Length: 288
Length: 276
Image (cartoon, rainbow over all chains, first blue to last red; front, side, top):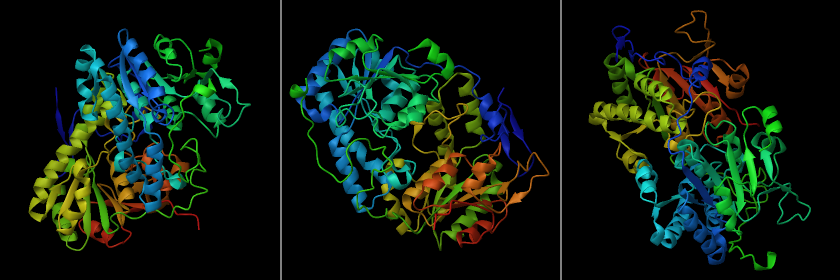
């Protein structure tokens, strides 16, 4: 079955496959690679990301009631927890920028802040099955899930020095919200829930603008078109949703109201739901 | 509610509050330009399907040329994958695997090629350098070593879904470019089996004409159906601080790599000139 194809002395040797000799930049080849359905790998896992500045930096009073709710919900739902960075990460960026460290270097050092937060959350959840999930241990997730554990992952994606350049902005584009989004996308997770300190998205920053009105549902496409100056979630998540194969719905909820987590896990819209319909005209008719 | 909300413990910085996505993030700050981490380094990417899969007759002469060049230039080699990556992608696609899994799978083929290249280059100082050893590059280079790395970026499961299809958009061309940009490298050279960029695939269309120099923007505007280099690299070139041009050279023609390392224009240069 695995046929070697020699093109002659000094020429290339191929293995017979539909992609053999094809350029992987050829749009016809790329379009054809889209024909099949994508396999959901762990479809009953829910990914819950706890914001750094929004929750963790508020300390015990915000974090402990939320983790109590996580433990309660774990009896019903398989949960994978992500943790963000927060104020120390912003300070890291500040010092690194001042030193002239390039974008890839910022991405490399920033993740340590997530790791601090991950250790803290793991210590709090240890007696309830909280375990640190290293990225190298990704493939043992099924074992931990079956054993009733709560894996805790640091949010930053492992782009490190390879973080794509961001021009004059210089701060990494792919940050913690995106890191957990990709976990949900690859696993084909049941839901992707972002726990922040606001009820969800507003037309402006509600912390500074009292006229801001709440947005219970919006499409990713519309959000990208509106391009609001303040967004409670990383823009890279919204950009990636449009091309996602699995995670085309996310929900942002208020972690200062911990009881909302259980309802969000049950699929209820209790914050802002962002969807990325493949056909925007159809979505408008369906609602969320 | 507001009165009982636990306060954020903050650290003041000159970075504006709110989202880090703001285009104006650094506007009010006084941060200087980013440094070049290893400014003398030349990153050379050896193509997988387009070079390494040709075997001994193509690779052995390149090994000798690289060894000679390394006596006067600091070189880091990045290795491509090739036909085995395609075979794996093809099966993975059929199985319905998501892009992130395909990216993790693709890296293994480039690692095989990096191992083989290291064995060939060992007597000339070839060292296999993993992502975890990246910070040791200065020591290897200072001792005259030739670091050899996997071209794929370490994105793995975190490779974002591409705009079209499911094959990872960031493969070995992108990985070596991002490494060169982070390092602030002196040059980024892609060794392929063609003289450079053509108006169409010269292996399939005999009427294709050669393009010696082009800007990333022109290439994006031309929007060719096919491209000799991964499309994402064009966008990266335009946002880069240091590596604003790359050269594609024909590794089957001995001496071209040497001349490219000397700064000569011997293949196709793709560039993103900075606004004056």
